[in-house]
Length: 507
Image (cartoon, rainbow, N blue to C red; front, side, top):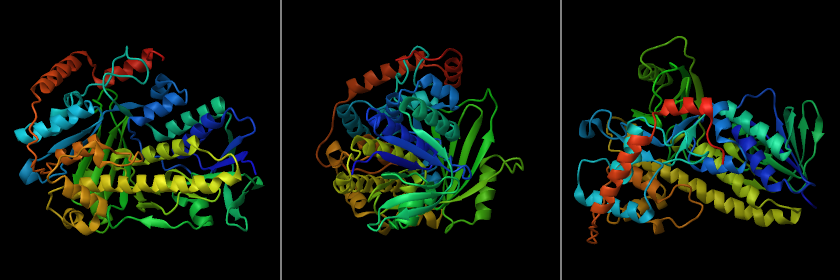
């Protein structure tokens, strides 16, 4: 049987990312029809407003203008995540911080500069040793100039964005460029065939709708792959201990500074994200309800925001942390929150959705006979990706030397870490990480990502191989690059205002 009719159940960022990836990949096949079914009664979660640099390639491939994107989605530039107070304040100072930057030198330079930083044992922050972007971020500069072409810049960057407006932009693009159909109706039931595959969807307004292939983007409900097809959920709350978030939108002054990075501030039982858009901040207080009461969390969020403000509305979000045992089952693939959820540290939600949707689109089944082999391939790749992302998130907790609560002490317990993470950390006690430590192309975080976190958090690597390098020339070149960037890059808000007024140079 030829697969011709595809249903995407659920809108939001996940559904419309999938619609664009599949629409672009299958557009030349005129026999294929893609329909996105969205309930008018269910609002998307829409709290994740951070991305990683890969999103630029995705948006450009969809034919979306960066100027239009910035103007329509309240976009600001993101060059880093600044981690505040993830280390013990008594040892490392109040408001200690490190940066996980996006712009790094070439692989040889980053490895050599890492060894040099370890052997010099100086007071310079690791990120400052590695990249000119450290000072650019700290001084509030943009990663590009108004003369830079779209999706290009002096430094690597991603975005902060309004998730609801981003979904609308993606929806308009998928429908106008790739012919994706949009159907507003509530899916009330999922009907299975005798072999366990999905036969049809029962809808509130349109009766039964039958398709050949189904994409589950129904969010935490996971209507298709969980409720109907009963694919089990792998709970990783024994590794990642936070399970609740209080989220709020805070209006800001139109002339206030916009940090060109996400701020992630650790607290007694978790951390706080703080993302600045042009006219508001998105703030989320992430915590473990096993280590902090909801009432205490509200008091601490009030304190972070400068005192209780009755005009601010907090929304509580329980977080079931983990992922599906299978992401592809029979004729159904889960994407987005239906696939799984990890806490929003390092912006993994949009990252994994984009990665998964692109991977699916590259090898989409043409015939029913293709399903089994492609299902096995997809599940193997995505299972590895999710497990390694759990390790990377866990790294931020298990390296902390905070000792002010049982939350941080429990996070250092080896029983809360995967075997692979423990083996890597044991290796890196005596050897600096190298690219060969990451075996799979399905890792979504690589060497430099780990370097920024490991040595930003003062991980002790004992160099036993006489690895001393001479990096004087590299360091001098980096200083020259930093000075040039500081002379040429504009202040962050100033660039955004110019883009909104004049636009960027189209590719």
